[in-house]
Image 1 (cartoon, helix red, strand yellow):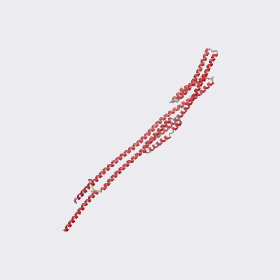
Image 2 (cartoon, rainbow, N blue to C red):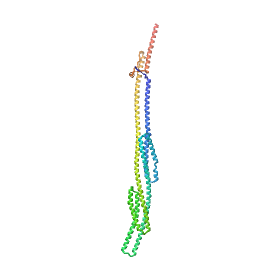
Image 3 (cartoon, rainbow, N blue to C red):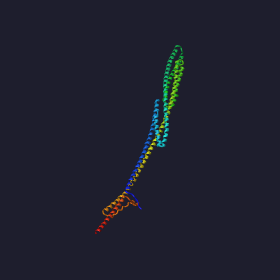
Image 4 (spheres, rainbow, N blue to C red):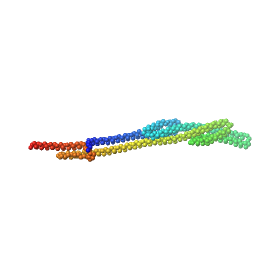
Length: 454
């Protein structure tokens, strides 16, 4: 039993058109999907990766600005300049803005790894701000100590000048008194009869006393000059131990030299109230000078200690900067990973779309070839048979019959055809049958007429 396949040419053409439309729709859907995926990847790049990289770079710039500002603060020479340079609100605002942007991106796209990096970055930044504050306070303390040292040095210079002037006055007065004593003793020796031994003893005693007094005056001048020099030397040392060495050795030796000279002068000049007053005034100034030198040494020691603390904070700041830079590099690496993932996804989508287009094209080509072959076999062969049949009829052979050959495909699946070609063949057969019937009627009519005539 054959199945009746109502496969007409019209239906085959409609099927061919539907196949083409379906293929085009598949290609359009593939293109639409590819376009959407590309847009998604581009949005990730523009909304996540690029802002992430930009925010990371902004944080790096803010930290660099902090470091540059700290270098300027280290070179500050006045309180007003320090107050101006210590303002960091704009830098903190820039950092906070970039950090908040990073936090927003991390919460939406980057994931827990970025949040962990940001938490570590926040801890380092807080420590960085504390060290920055310590630098500012240290510089402020250093400026204050430098100011106090400057004031003490001015006092030292003034006191040193006064002491030198007093020492010169004492030295001049002592020399003048010595000359008067020499003249007096010389007159004493020459006016009265003295033995030669007594005269020599008087001269030796006078010379010894005058030499000791003049040496004491000279020691005062040298001691004051040495104290002033050692006071300035304290400002040049870089270690607190050296300050102690200068105080305990050089300054102490000069101070002892001055004290011994003062004792000599006080014991030698008891008869001159004016000289005793000058020596006492010098002694008071010497006490003030030693107090100033002690204060300068203490201030210089504190300044060196503050500078050492500042150097340690600077080293720690450099470590914090490196740690922040490392976190920023990790964030930038995360951004590059997201970029690479987006590029990989885009590449996968592109490969998938290429595969879909290739498969769809192959299916469409194969289907069109098969349909074309079927249409060729179903149309051209039967039409050729119909043309040959019509040619036979045209030659006058009304006994011919038309029988369409079944295609191999129809025969294999035992399908009967019922299309336009079969209808055409049937109508041609009906036409031949009707022609034969008409001819038979004409022949019978002729026979009847002939019979009637005879």
